[in-house]
Length: 132
Image 1 (cartoon, rainbow, N blue to C red):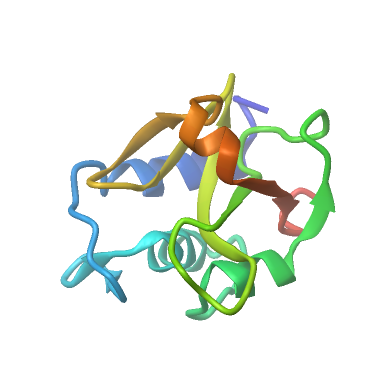
Image 2 (image 1 turned 45 degrees about the vertical axis):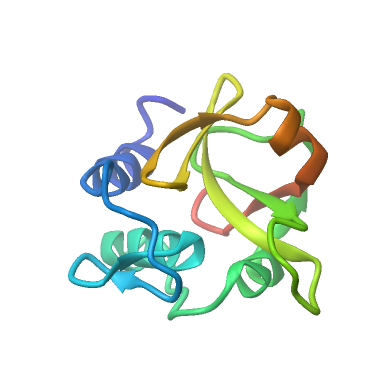
């Protein structure tokens, strides 16, 4: 998958924003990003999947649900309870493999998904239909 054209396109776009600050509601490079704004922007800009602009729950709802064992780079990883909300999924990130994700943290960057914090908030993996 690391040589897959679609994944490389996705990763190239996502890496452009490493270091950008977290901004609640942000959804463009001009405003910076929150987690869902970042993921929506990356997928929309690459033309791999039209997400429009939605929240982490909305992105999760678009995905085919997959297991941790099925997850591959370019899939999405979802978390719950990262802030108070009336829906379960509150954070989304791009899974890049080997227990790492690229996400809009504070700032945008790579994080391990197997830390105590992310393990406690883990919700599930999802796949947008770009890999058919």
